[in-house]
Image 1 (cartoon, rainbow over the protein chains, first blue to last red):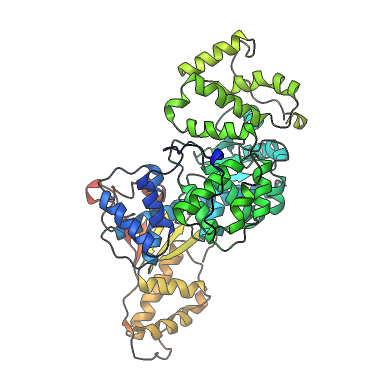
Image 2 (image 1 turned 45 degrees about the horizontal axis):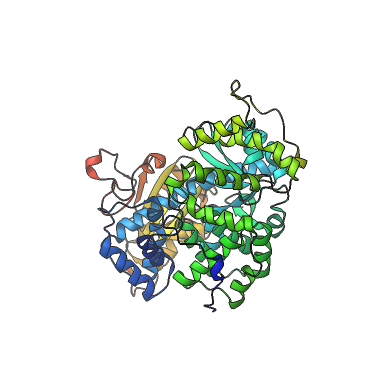
Length: 407
Length: 147
């Protein structure tokens, strides 16, 4: 195993407390994902500072507990809270099965109407890499459909009573990678037309689809990402600011790396380069190797970090860390560049005139309903520059699919 | 087993079963888990009993009665579909006598509303035995014992 650095010094950004796990979260992650004495030492250290019942646990840590339970049992550890931890495992096993049952019906319906599906994140990782439906808590199920079938999928789901939570589906498809869909009974899942927000071109997911593998979801047949793409997805999706500490990407990535599915490191490099996420992936892998002794081959670091990231990618990575600070998210000086970088992702593949003409619509969407001081400032500046039309009447329902050529 | 709406998992010797269509949660003991595993592997009434008599020590007639009662409960709850031609009877030959555990009639614990149970905080709202057993002071319906 190589312990050489993946990154050159110039590519290293200062550690962000919010982007990376806290020391206590890292202990719990080690207790959940390592083997042997290092796992047990981490658990002892964590329990010396926390009490399962008395301590306030952040959601990210709470969601690691079923994996901790399974790891403790695998090591034959007997500890006073084991029955309660077992209960937490039961809880998530049941909750996940309930979500899967509902997702299986949706997938079956979509596939029956000719819409291809690919299951992302927790449901796929649990089945293929953790091989356990209770260790990886899920809040919902994420289903990807081909971009060109996004409208058809939404219409098909509407016929069985599922509606987008946000009424402006047209803008969601144009400017986002996914949207929550809700049933009459209040159940929810995420419909994706792009697998990641770091890849909003019509063809961004083509290679993901080509390398995908069959995945049975109870009685339904779907697909999931191959191991190489699942690793990229876990790291890139996970390493971002989130209301809930997004630390489970570490457990997910470790599960993928330990699952025995081969990783095509050259394909990983190509995909990271094409999506302009080399820096994030390299930083993530470097962290996994350093903190969790992740089984990375000696060539992995060199491959992923082989090509110097573009200035925009480096800027984006810098703001990723800044964005991890909630205070920064409200500051106009931080928000402007963040939104600009986001728009560069959204408008990727368009020529300059189309980027310019598409900006007002994006700003209108992006600033909708937000009243933080920074947003008010940005909105006023946009109005002064004539980039955003004055407020009009209520949003009308979508009238048809956007032109694919515009993406 | 009535798949896909029924699904089960053996967690360190404890079997839990979900009827996803009805939203019900069940748990059962070691003998119940053995019966369930035998049903899953395609055994029918007399085959189940024969296999149990290799593992447990008990009166063949009582074992047959208890197993039939347990399987009836599983059927009543929509967890399995039973071939009524193949009920267990106590006439099969006993298994080896050594190292057999005493037979106890299998028990089926039922919690009727899984979605409500999932609203419980599995750390703080439960007894020390863990979710789904709620704290007693929470005026929550306790599990029904089926057998």
